[in-house]
Structure formats: structure tokens, C-alpha cells
Image 1 (cartoon, rainbow, N blue to C red):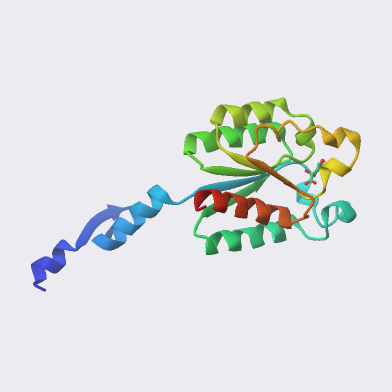
Image 2 (cartoon, rainbow, N blue to C red; image 1 turned 120 degrees about the vertical axis):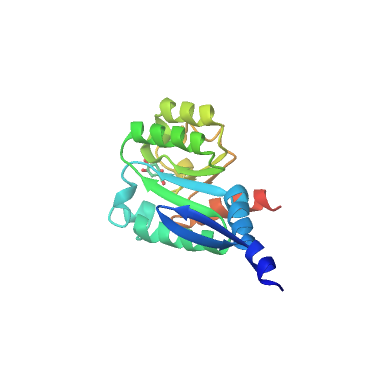
Length: 182
Ligand code: DQA
């Protein structure tokens, strides 16, 4: 290979004032990943930051951090981009969903927690952005108190996973992966 051929395989650019040099093939892979990688966001609602201490007979012994770490590791092996958030505020959940719409997120894994049974605002945000989502619960909500039988989400979700403690999130991610590559 001549020096000039070799030079043609490099691409020079300046980012943050630093000269960067890429192989063309690296750049192509970078753009391809940016364009085609599946982007998934996990939203956890109120009181889920207390997992591990909170009613362990319903929700299990594991902390949210532990469950999300395991989910993140699974996502890496499946080559999908996954980020998670937790908030105790309904408004923050609505804002986050609206941002996800603007950012072109592909799927949401959503545990609305207590807002499952009350929130028209979060439901409307999901309908507005039209991002397919899986509704997740650690506990088996359908066999608990009557007020938990009402969900504002299951009729608009692509599916519901409920009752498998922290594993519910893994099952939701697996269901999304099955849709991407049937
Ligand atoms: C929950 C079930 C809800 O009824 C409850 O309010 C929660 C957690 C679950 O994951 O089992 O906070 O969403």
C-alpha cells in the first residue's frame, strides 16, 4: 500500500480543540452504531429508591442500584444502549418522557410505582411521544389490594411484567430484544 492510499484511510477532525485522527472504518462503525443502536430508557417511580428496605416481602431484598446494575450488564451483552432514572415526582416523570420523545428513544421500561394507579398525566405523556413501553412491577399487583388492580398503563403498553421482583426488569428487556430480533 502506498503512503497516499494509507492517508486516504484516515480522517482528521478537530473536537474540543484537539486534533483527532480516525480510521475511516472506525468512523463508519461509529456512525452505524449511532444510527442503528437500540436506545432503551428505564424509568422508576416513587419510593423505588427504597427497594431493599421497603416491604421486602412484596418487593424483595435487593436495592434498586443492584437491580439496575444487573440490567445494565445484560444490556451490554445484548449490544443495546440502556440508561435508567428514578424519581419521586410525577412532573419529573412527565418531563423525562417528553425529552425521550425529542431524543428519539426506541423503548421505555416503566415502573410507574404508585402512579400506576393514579396518573393520567404520565399516561398522556406516553401517548404523546408514542414510544413503545413495557410496564413493570416487582410485586404481583393483580393479586394485591383492590386499588392496585387499576392501572392507567397496561392497555397502552406493549406488555406487562409483574411479580418477579427485580427479575421483572430483565424479562421486560428480554421481551424488547425479542421484538427487535424475532
Ligand atoms: C409497584 C407496585 C405499586 O402498586 C406500588 O405502589 C409500588 C411498586 C411494584 O413494582 O410492584 O410502589 O409498582
